[in-house]
Length: 158
Image: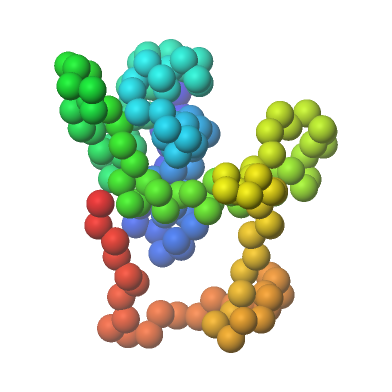
């Protein structure tokens, strides 16, 4: 069995993000949590994942601060898995991945659902990246530069 490389200390934020949420089961668990799944059995039923794999992935997501556990809201002896603010922060990533697949999938007609605004029932617009002055940006319009000394990235705690 090959040991997975950790990117936890990598200087690239994309690599660091993949360290936290990069495996497909984790992303699918987060997707299910975004749509309301909270209990182990709900995740297992919707994903068809064997118990030991689901247990490991849920524990890792809790350890990463993406999910937290809480007593079941119905007062039963079960525990629920709830998204933290860090977990809710994955939402635009999910939308971007979905929209990428809708655009480039070899068989988009096989995609069973469309993403719509609940209130209006209309499809969601494609995500776009804008500059601070409102210009639409493409990959050719951006660059990386070193972070200024003493400037720390904004940190949100779970």
